[in-house]
Amino acid sequence: MKRFEHLGSICPGKLESARRGLVIDATFPRIICLCGSTKFTAVFNQVNRDLTLAGYIVLSVGCHVHSDEELGITAGQKAALDELHKRKIDLADAVLVLNVDHYIWTSTKGEVEYASRIGKRVGYLWAEMTQPQKQLGQLVAELFK
Image (cartoon, rainbow, N blue to C red):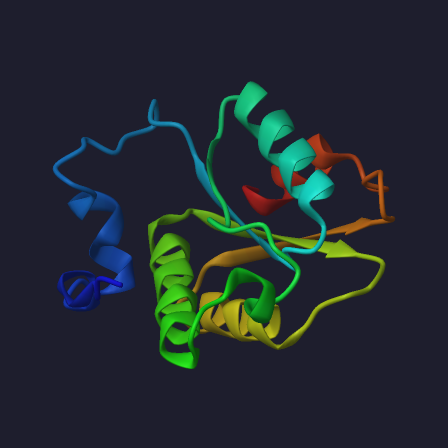
């Protein structure tokens, strides 16, 4: 898996203006990175769809499997995937944690800690197995106040 050291040289505060030469202004859509357990694929897909239809750019997990064993990756590949997701957090304006059935595990906790450390806004969408409980639009509006 590729390493992304070139992004490491850009401090998070300057990353917005350095996104591949894009002009980031008030008309550019907000970018939200989804975090949470990949075992809840249906919730990820629903929230991704709803945010996309609302006009946001959504960054999400790349592999929807319940466990690293199921994905068939090594510990090194898992570490590289975790770093890749942190780069998505770097690119995002905010992080939305899909907290399904109060299930936040080690990877998600690490992502939230990372996002908080670099000053990203973090919101939590509390959900049951099949349906978000809090109004998504309300939560996202609170993220960008």
